[in-house]
Amino acid sequence: MSRITILLVDDHTVVREGFRKMLEFDKDLHIIGEARDGREAVTLVEELRPEVVLMDIAMPRLNGLAATRQMLKVRPATKVLILSAHGDESYIKNAAEAGAVGFMLKQTSMEEVGRAIRAVHQGKPFFSVQLPGNPPNASTRSSARLKIPDAKTHQLTSREMEILQLVAEGSGNKEIAQELGIGIKTVEKHREHLMAKLGLHDTAGLTRYAISAGIIESSVQVTIT
Image (cartoon, rainbow, N blue to C red; front, side, top):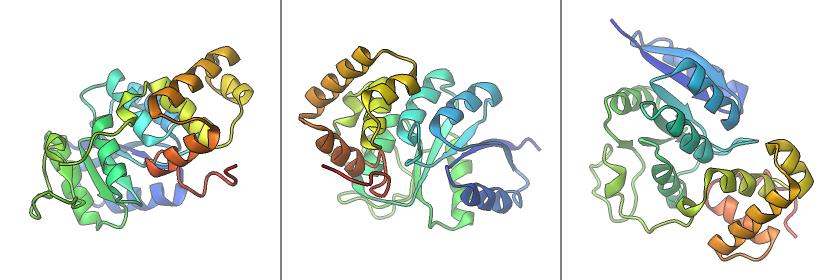
């Protein structure tokens, strides 16, 4: 029997270990790798070619939304299933727009996670969180049918998403340039584009937006000035 190959992506070791131990009981599921952040996940998707990625959203260096966009460019056949601690509408909306085939809360039972993995592996969207205006029996449904307003996040390029996260985490232009291997002037230009696209005017606004959109967790940013 062929097994579904899975990449686990979460910045908390204990979470990855927990999922690994529980999923190993299912003989048709096979964990082939683990990643601690989105950037490492993109690299491993290219190297390991997993069929399904279990992806956290809020992670350092590169969040799950930006990582999903990048890995689907590298390997479109991979199916991404988002597992988040938050079920806010903006989180689900942005996950769907990034290309995720499914969205579940981390509080979900492992049996349900197994069901979701098998569903998305077969190309069946699996969104287990109920949203206003959607049918109550729709645990598996197409992201195109999610009746939610358009988000501004989908207007951002992958690079802009990376810079938005780093800005929101408190990095300055010089640190961002070093992290991404680009020039400081390039970073400044991306920040200008970010603010124009999002209708924001300062770093505090970018940070608040990143938190509300689920790009970072509120605990990541110590001070918003």
